[in-house]
Image 1: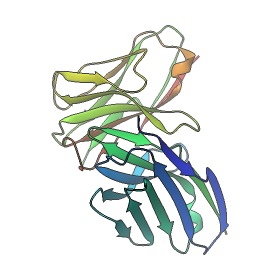
Image 2: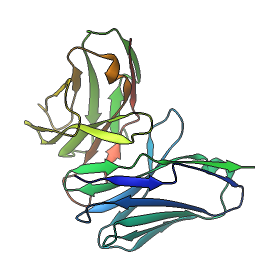
Image 3: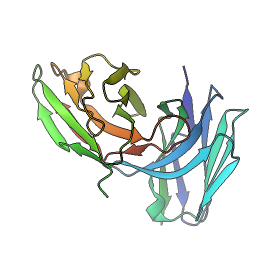
Length: 110
Length: 113
């Protein structure tokens, strides 16, 4: 059974600092890994999707890396802003299913 | 651009009542699924379907029933609601297996009292 872990569970940083969010998974037989953002009381917003054959994916200030052999992914958010405050979830896809981590709740202080 | 549509968005049920959460997608996706999200636990798969007439259980299927009579719709039924089913429910769809993106609905907040 795939287990996905996100560390830390919560993170508070001053505005402008770079964010580093970690995700690890136990079974490397995945099709892709996806990072989501979730605001309180809201649904999931897909941020980045990395296919299993890729090493990284970038979108604006966001960069996600994937090391499938070691079962790790890292989401980097450059120059954080208060609007980046949210919960960030990673999920790995094996065949039809997504397995989620519990998320990292980020607070960016102005 | 409707994507994945869930209804209702909010619902309060009494213990023992039944109800159906509706999910519809307009992208002609074969694969649809239901997840529940509880505090501190991430999302967990309840049931999924790989096409009309085909459903299977996920990680936490007990107390829920599904059917898939059309490609577009994948309703989730709570047969006899329990307080433990208080949760946020998300429906998702994708165009098949493997590396394709999975799209999520906006969620249904369910409280069982």
